[in-house]
Structure formats: structure tokens, C-alpha cells
Image 1 (tube, rainbow, N blue to C red):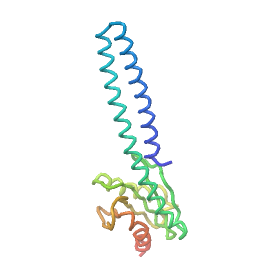
Image 2: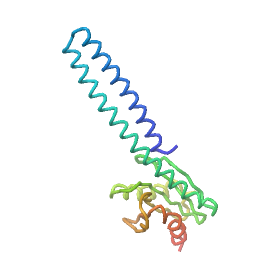
Image 3: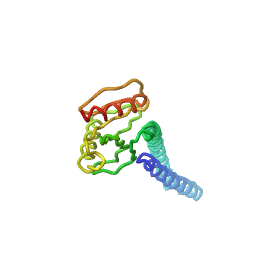
Image 4: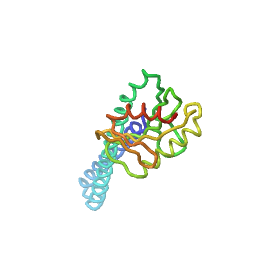
Length: 189
């Protein structure tokens, strides 16, 4: 299971817990109001409103994680075409830094490619992190990266993107398999 999918489930659990608390506070406010303790009912109502706001926030974060998980699923499907050509694929690989390495494609030529998936936007932090992941992969997974490693940032909701930023290939999903094949061959020269 991918990191964003696990994150989505954790956030949905937090949403459910917070929604239950909000419902309990609302019921408590109603019962307190029925007893005529208006001040305490007001305080409990305010707490219930705050809990509803927190629950909505957790639900929104779960939705964002779901989008990320779907993007990673799309990249995994795109990478599956390489498996028939002798590539080895790993997904959601733990490394020393934050998060995980979304996907690793190991070419038959001995080049390991760390792939970071982004739905539509990225910034310098993401490019730097995938570069660090590629270096880590080469140092810590020598068996996979016997001829070197590369970092690739894949944009799922873009088309026709193919460029290099800070020694990291930035590509759209429609160019991913082609660019990986090409990069694995060039790296041996």
C-alpha cells in the first residue's frame, strides 16, 4: 500500500474520531440546554462547532491524500509496461528521509531510477528530495544500482513535459516509459 493511501486511511480515522467527539459535544449541549444550564450549553456548542471544523479539515486532508494515491496508482500502471522488458519495479520504498520513494524502476542495464509522483505541481523541495533519494538509492541499494541511479519527477496531470532540473528528469506521465528507457541506455555510455 502506498504512503498516500496509508495517509488517507489515517486521516479518515482522525475524521471519524473527531466527528464522534463533535456529535457527543452537540448531544451534551442539547442535554445541558434542556436542563436550563444555558452557559454550559453555549460552551459545549462552541466546542462542538470547533470539533466539526476539525473534522472537516481531516476530511479535506484525506481527500488530498486520495488524489496523491490515485496519481501513484497511475504511475505504477504506466511503469508496468517496462516489466515485460526485464525491468524490476518496487513501490513505496522506505528510505532515511521523510515519506517514501514512490517508485523505483531498475533497468536491465543496472540503472536504478527513483521516481517521485506529483499530480500537477511541484517546487524545488521536491526536486531536491528526489535527487537525494537517487543518491541514497545508489549508496544503499548497490545491488539494484550497480551502474548508477537517476531521479525522476513524474507529473500525472501534464502532457508533453520532458526537461532536466538540478540533475533530475521532470517528465509527464505520457513520456515516462520512453524517457526511462532512454535514460537507462544513455547512462551506460
